Image (cartoon, rainbow, N blue to C red):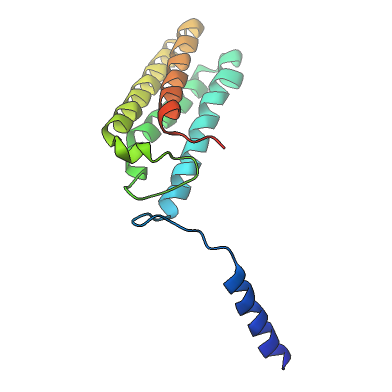
Length: 149
């Protein structure tokens, strides 16, 4: 057997033995799943930076910028969950009660906008309180729709 034919046979065997990701009928993976994961990571990083970095430093401009990014993501979040899309962290309950999921996303957007307004006002205590509300809206959605691994 030639080296080329041997390599081709080995490659085909590896492909045949590779695990195949099984999906339920009607489900799909797409770049939108990767995009939503990246956006959730950005949003999580933003809220963490508010609490751990910007608020302690009194950097209200950075708090406002983070809050506006979080609000923008929350506004578009439901669009990143087309029916049938799957990811490890998304519970199927999202699609079973999508209107509740949308309501939770709107609450998150509203809380993030309130945080931006508080940051513009500059009162650290009010900003901390508003940031906790944002965190609470994140938690409410995670408790209902996020699968932790």
